[in-house]
Amino acid sequence: MKYALMSFLSSVARLVDEENHCVLCGNPTGSGMPVCVRCIENKLLTMARSCTFDRLCEHRCSRCGRQLISTKGTCIQCREPQSFVALDRAFPLFPYTPAFQELLTLWKIRGYRSLSLLFAQMLHHALENCLSRSFVLIPVPPRPGKIRSKGWDQIQELVSLVRPSSRYRVVHCLKRLSHLEQKHLSRTERGGNLEGQILCTYIPSSDCCAVLVDDVMTTGTTLEYCARSLKTAGYSEVYALSLFYD
Ligand SMILES: [Zn+2]
Ligand SMILES: [Zn+2]
Image (tube, rainbow, N blue to C red; front, side, top):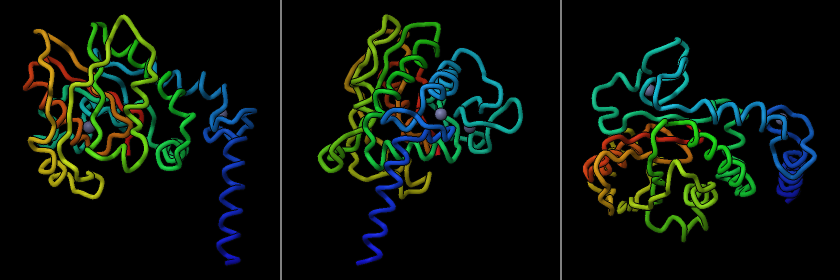
């Protein structure tokens, strides 16, 4: 009982601390947000604006967008045949660091939903810069029953908050049939779980370009199977933008 009380108090203290200190730089935020204004302007906005699908980015894998130690090329995973067949290129906005992992945990696991508006703003800046041509923005669909069991879906929330733009419009055209969660499956099992399980319910006009949006990219299998469905429906190019990767 004493242990439970101590554990509860330390989690409250931690939450209060997170509300007052920036998870990225440690300075006081002066607001209820876990990121300070300076980090939003100097770090997050710069990262969002660096997203590009038209040209290759230094220190990023040319297919999945993960950070590389070398200047150019593809990561080990993307050198495997059949890793990405339909998906032309992916780009995760934020780096894989403990601070950004903490930000992801606060938002996704601990339900810090005030971050949704901030991430939607970053998504908007990324989308304004990522392609020179117009495109449709397509959210990765949640598995059936997710919203009922969890209470919300991060991607649906992001897309509902993203600012309208003349460069893109949101199209909810993907439907997921599989009930199984992907996170406990291997890469091969993930593919098997999604084979034929993502439907595109909209036929695009010719030469239409799509940008999928996701919160976290892990192996990229879900994005690849979404892209396969979109290419089969007639999309000529399919890119993917995620906030995080792990
Ligand atoms: Zn900061
Ligand atoms: Zn890669």
